[in-house]
Image 1: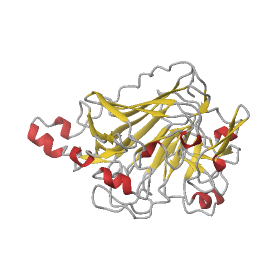
Image 2: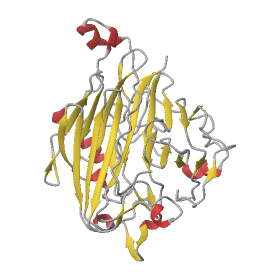
Image 3: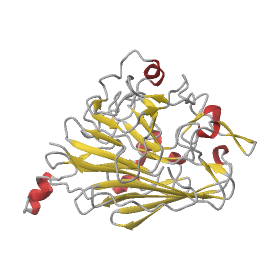
Image 4: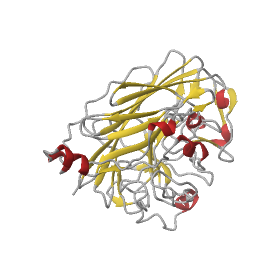
Length: 388
């Protein structure tokens, strides 16, 4: 769990060498053919002014040829291209070819930085030191991901730190979406040389408030537009999860995963038990639940997902106590994505590292309060390799 007062230094992850056929090619032309990125997104398609601020597309690269593109509109991950088992660069994140696609999307959270409060707050209501606060309702009857105009809708200030790192900053003003305090937020996204996509979050406030930041990348490890994710294999290091009511608000209890469809302590496909006769799966229309992570630090993965066709393996590392696993249950084929293919039902999943939903109303959960003088600081990594 993060320490809000003390800066947490990054634990050095074990080095993981990724040996791919394309990387062994001596010919530059051969390498470029094998590792060609299928993403056609161009920076010019993101040059637009929104709310009087300029939108940009930032391209990150690491020494192994991995690439990611980030836009400061909503702090979104637009693409993330990693090698598959044959060495072909594969874009594993759903997104759009231009900023207009994100603006008009019926799904507001594709690739977005989420805040001030990731996940749900019951009825949008919470108290701090006995004072009532009401955030906007956008997931009736609750607040979801920060309200109607959450961080996914704002234009961040962005700058490249180096070829593999972009820094995004935003001032969320006092009472924006009903949250107290002027919140200065800094998010740093980078590609590391061990093939991790690193997410670092930092925030300070001038009034006591609640904060729960995350990123909402929608993944398909077989590649965007490749079809169902139900055959992806998932493992989550969590002996408990948070059951929810019909509005997807945690009941407040921790429930053992043993003997339930939520037991991913051993590798299982997403689709194996997703249609079982289980009230939690019915209420969530599939998996849309927060897993209570076992004791961990940044040296060990808390979740692993493997694409059944691509062989791409994604390991998730975090300092957060929870992981929201979402199986694309509300995808309705209403949006045309980068490959010209619609976002069909359950063709992506999310692994959102975070504190628990509705924590401001559930004192038994780890606190999400941030006080003046303290610093919110946390990080998560998505590390990529292959299995053959």
